[in-house]
Image 1 (spheres, rainbow, N blue to C red):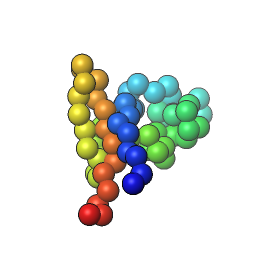
Image 2: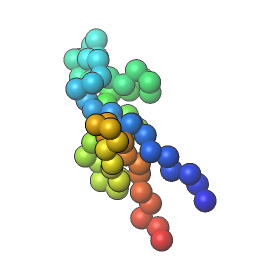
Image 3: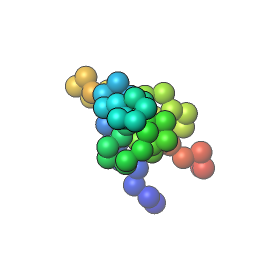
Image 4: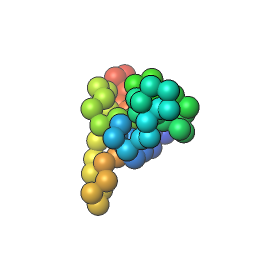
Length: 64
């Protein structure tokens, strides 16, 4: 079984602006936020929990 760890959710407002267009930019993946694989706060197919005021999430599998 593949592990599915909880990861801190990335908010667009926490990212720097792209120097070319001004859109939020993920420095970790070198992509615009909309194209990035980081888990955002409102993604379908994700489970969320708050721990000490920080939002964490993980993708959930639709397979049973």
